[in-house]
Amino acid sequence: MDKPSFFAKLIPIARQLYLEGSPIYPSVRLAQCWLETGGNIPYWNNLAGYKVGSGVPNGYWKGAVVNKQTWEVINGKRVDVVAAFRAYDNLYDFFKDQDLLFARSLYTRVREAKGPFEQAQMLLECGYATDPSYAKQIIAIINGSQLTQYDSKNGGDEPMTAEEKKAFQDLTDQVTKLSATLNAQTAAVTALQAQTAQIQAHDQLDVIPAWAKDAVDAAIKAKLIDTSAGGSYDFYRLLTVLHRKKLI
Image (cartoon, rainbow, N blue to C red; front, top):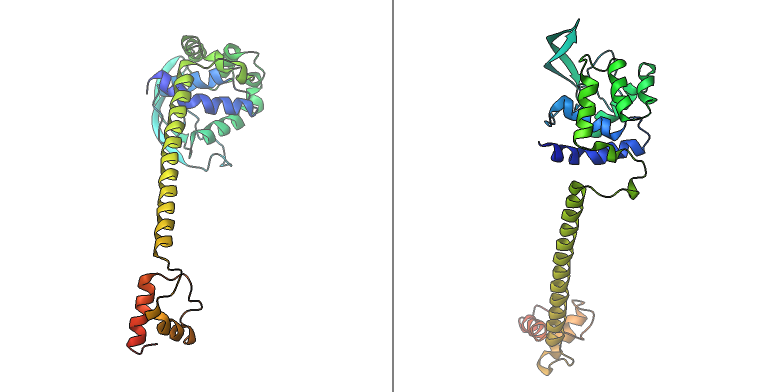
């Protein structure tokens, strides 16, 4: 997935979390996810290399695990390892679980960072990653994609990005098409109802045909019908046949 598509998918979630009180700037969250995944969203929905560690399942992480190869910088050298990563039902649960991690005292400086660049640096200094260039890479991604525009909590006053405008226009077009389809269906149903009413009115006879009177009286006496009014020609003909066959 390219960067615009990747960020367009995650921006609404990152913004929602930030407005819900997450201490992580959306720009940092978006950049970290791109750095960790390269735009490939895994089926286990862990976008920032959150390992199982000594944690216990909670409302967001149900205990599912995926083992995969990764690497760490140990004593200044890159070392390939196989690690156990947390797996999630959806991206929102992953981010909420990550916020529980950042609520620990270990990440106090991450929460108290005065801006996204400082927060990126604090992620490194607090031990979230072992790569010494981790903060620099996050900051480069933030600057390269102008992600700080999503860090304002007063989002309603910000102009939409090109991706957001396109998504909004696509949604508007879909609503317009659905409205046109619904209007056409409503008109068709209304016309059908009118046609049905016209047919019913045409078939109803105001007066019982003289040749059917005995049959109608017999049907009422036998309690097959409770009224003789408003029957159709075919209705009276059926009663007459039944009466002549001595079935009523």
